Structure formats: structure tokens, C-alpha cells
Length: 404
Image 1: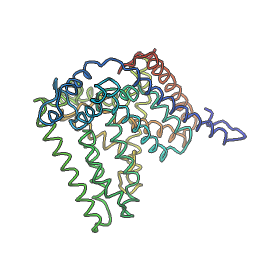
Image 2: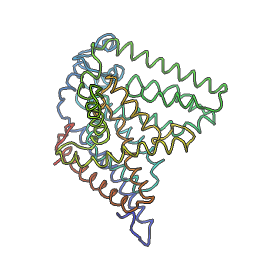
Image 3: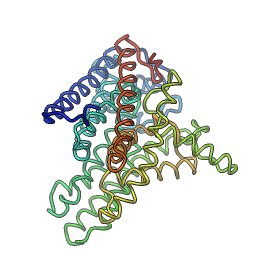
Image 4: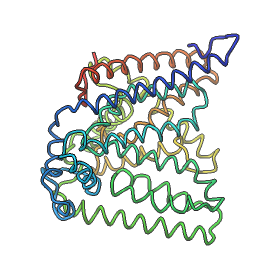
């Protein structure tokens, strides 16, 4: 790999990585823009969501079940309708908020990556991971809430990276953030998975003074409001089904020991390896070693970082295992699909961070292995990114594109 070549001017090598990262970012954004502007026809799930957008009066979102038994944050769908109606509900307008959410999420997660991936080639690899993810491209222009999930997760994580310093300074940014972030639950259900991190940060605070009590009150009010809103307007009015019943094959089963390991294993592999591309199948299989690497590293880096960082949950290294545990528990309780990549898309940027960080960690004591794996991963990402881009520029990119 170029990053390890002995050159007379290492600055030039680093500069090359920076230029490549900028190019990779432009490539990802341009593919998303092309996908958005292609105005591909609504597919089945989108059509059922669009039925509510098209036929509901504004008050209907908060007094009726969504059409066709769809599960969608009511407030978010209401906002989509408000944005799209002045444009006669054309495809660009109904997908606009999804597009804005994903592009914003990309910016937020790139900022997070800049804190952790100081090596320029590692940062480039993270950029290429986004370009090599068919889901992170496809859901930038889809009438579904998954891009908002990616953005909401990024905002929580970004705040937690600064939480310690902001709290020590008794900053108004901390006070308002701890009170506003929980409200994201009204537009992204996966935001509720991040409440535990805010609560835990307040719980382990050393100074429990007046400012601490104000923050506890702010967080508590926001959490109650958001949970109450979702229950009253979304859950209470929903069809008499749970979100997992539509994904009955994607839970953690305890029917037998064999069934448990089968569903858990397949679900975990999907959670770590199906964010790239699935067709042809060889592309899907090629992602398995990287998925296993990221999964194993998740445990290693949690226990290493949790103790060394004073039992804090403020970086992706400590948050990843907690989020995985929450998804596992919800899957075991049959309350949320454990192995459906799109419903766990918020976890995708964290998986990519785990994979890249694991590769870089191998440099200590296993430099040659790190170089080989890093080169293989970059090569894999370039192939997949090219295939995704080719499909997008051809005018139609499906959620499971045949990239070659």
C-alpha cells in the first residue's frame, strides 16, 4: 500500500490521501445526487407510504392509522407532506427530506471520523466505505425514515464526543443538547436506543450540583415528551401488529439451541456485512471477512476502552457493543428485526468505523497483515463503489442492485 512505502517526501503521500478522500467524498455525494435526480418510480413500500402522504389531511396523521399498516414516525411523515404539497407531491419533493438527511448524516459522520481516524489513509478508507455501501446511497432517495435514523445516530454520537468537556464547562450547549436530542425520537425511532448514553453520562457525572439537576430535568422532560408523543400518536394508533411481525424471519429465536445460534449468527453477519452490496452473491460473500473482523474488534475495543477511559460511553468504541446488545435484546423479545440491514442502517457508520479501526490496530505487531487486509478492503470498496455508481448513473438504482 502507498501509505507504507518509504518515500523521500512522506508529506506528498499524506497529501495524496487527503486529495483522494476529497475525491471519494465528491464521488459519494455525486452518486447520491444522481440517484435522487433519477426520479425512479415508487416501489411497493414507498407506494404504501405515499398513499398516506397523498390522501391524508394534516390532522389525519395524528388521529388515524397510516395507510396499508405502514410503520413510520408520524411527525416526520407530516413534515414530508408539508414540504411536498407545494410541489404537487412530485417524486423529488417527497424524497427531499430523506436526501437532505443522508447528506447531512454524511457530514456529521465524517466529522466524527476525523476525531478518531488521524491516519489520512484510514480516513480515506472510511470515506470509501460510504461510497461502497449500496444502502447508504440508495436510502438517500427513498420515501422511508432510514436516512433520518443515520442522521439522528450521528448527532447523538457527535454530542457524546464533546459531552465531558461541555459538562465540565457547564456550557449552555450541553444543557440544550441534553434536552433537545431526545426529541429526535419523534422523527426517528432508533433515537430511543441512544437515550441510555445520555442517561449514563448524567448518572456518572462527578459533580451533581445545580447545573446537573437542571440537565437531569431537561433530559427527563424531553424523554417523557418524546416517548409520550410516539406512544399516543404512533403506537396507539398503529395496526394491531408489532414492527417485528413483518420480519418474522429476522429475530433471535430460542426455539432450540441450534435455532438460537443459527438466527443469532445469521443476524450478526447481516448486521456487519450486508451494508455493502448483495448482488452478485460473490460480492456479498467477499464482505464476510471484513464483517467478522469488525464484529470481533467490537468486543476487544469495548473492554480496552471502557476501562481505560474511566468507564465512559462517549466514543464509538464503547457505544458499539451497547447498541449491538440493545438490538440483540429487542430481536430476542421479537420487538425489532435483528437482521434487516435497512432497519439497522443507523448502525452502519459505526460498523465501518470498527472495521477501519481494527485494520489500523493490526499495525501494532501485525504490520504485514494490516497492509494486506487494508489493501484488500480498499480494493473491495473500489469495486463495489464503481458498481453502485454505474447503476446509479444508468438511471435506476434499486435497494439491492446487481452491481455487475
